[in-house]
Image 1 (tube, rainbow, N blue to C red):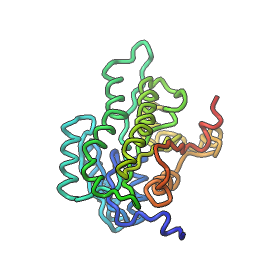
Image 2 (tube, rainbow, N blue to C red):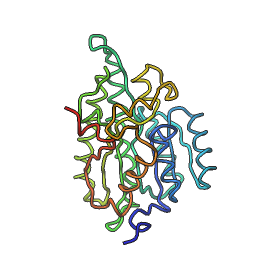
Image 3 (cartoon, rainbow, N blue to C red):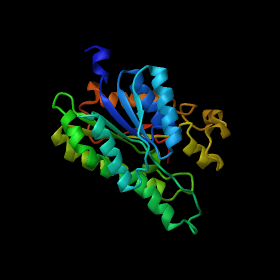
Image 4 (cartoon, rainbow, N blue to C red):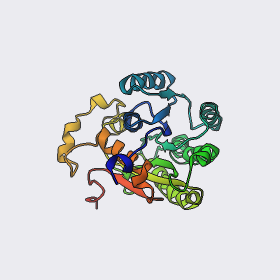
Amino acid sequence: MKIEDLFCIENKVALITGGSKGIGEMIASAFLANGAKVYITSRHADQCEATAQRLSERYGTDCIALPGDISKMEDIDALVAAVSEREEKLHILVNNAGASMAASFDDFPEEGWDMVMDINAKSPFFLIQKLLPLMRKAATHEDPARVITIASVGGLKTPKFNNFSYGPAKAAAIHMTRVLGAHLVKENIICNAIAPGPFPTDMLARGISGVGDRKSVDWGKFKDINPRARTGSAEDIGGLAIYLCSRAGAFTVGATITCDGGALAISS
């Protein structure tokens, strides 16, 4: 089989949460460059609209912004309604929106724990649940609908930062992927997760420097930290997402694939 057939996602409709920046934007770019129609959502409306416009112009295809805060059930309902008004089918859902909070163990607040758990574990579950009617219409035995949940290597090992709820929340997302993968494969809906390591994002910048701006970090220092001697790139995460959403990934179910340059492999 030819590469263009194995990895084709052309004309598929995708929804990417947290798609206005970071890993979400990287995946949106990869999908758009390969012929998919992409909806992105983010709680920051201005940024979401600006990213959608920039990506639409760059790739000459549709990237549509649907801003909202998916930590709130009413915003999940509004997002599902907005997609349903525009599309009869949804082929791909990427649960990428995430949150972290750092504080000392003695002072770690309940609201911080709940916020991180809600966004990283609870919201993906209910978004999948409420989008099932659209995904069922897209799903066939030959070409299943796909769900990718962006977890983290922090859900597979002990994180370095004092973000005590982040690792447990991502671990929950990883196990949820396995549970839903087993359940939804019966309906030709395939669930998998990606566990990224270091990517040059605002979230990682906040953990490293305390400032949520990736421009504030010297990413070059990862040459001495990561086995691949760098941080992840848009090609790394985008290529893996395309694999999972194409014919090439149609027999991979309930898996969590690391994308971390070998950081987990060498961890003790």
